[in-house]
Length: 261
Image (cartoon, rainbow, N blue to C red):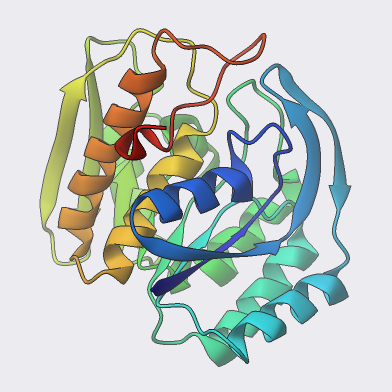
């Protein structure tokens, strides 16, 4: 078994956060572990409230994992506050210097709810993004991180934040093709394209994509290949749930479509 760690928030409805990460990691052949950073009360219609996890509790969770089952790769999702970001960054700088980190800079949910406090954005840029092997912002998140609007400017400014590579996801664009844009510090570039799937069941797609990349990286794939495989997996998960809605809002994708569940 290949252990992977998700450091992220909670989703009791199962479509996003650590629940989506665990389903994805399992479906792709890895052993998923979690550190809970925040507890949003949410369902497919939106976030009702957010309860912050004490920093001491987050540190204890990290220590318990790393002293027993060090992960081969780490996915970071919702962190919520400046103090949580600083605590996670401090720990990873000491204990995970050589571990691949896939960072999904969760700022706003699919339904438009704020999942990162505004005063924490600068800390995310200074403390964690430079440690990341790959960051996977969608276009609205990239605009929050860079204050740019044009795609090429977004990509270049994101890369200047110090991560090894960027996958800018294009799910929010209005086109018949769903295109994601990859660039790394060597100048390597690639666009990942697939036919856009007409569905309202998109809850947790960002979490699912970044967790899938983490799984493939943990299994030895290079970043660009991991991104392609992860996009293929997400496309399959979206197609499987396209006409099979759960909930009254943005339903989840079918993380386990490969398992015929």
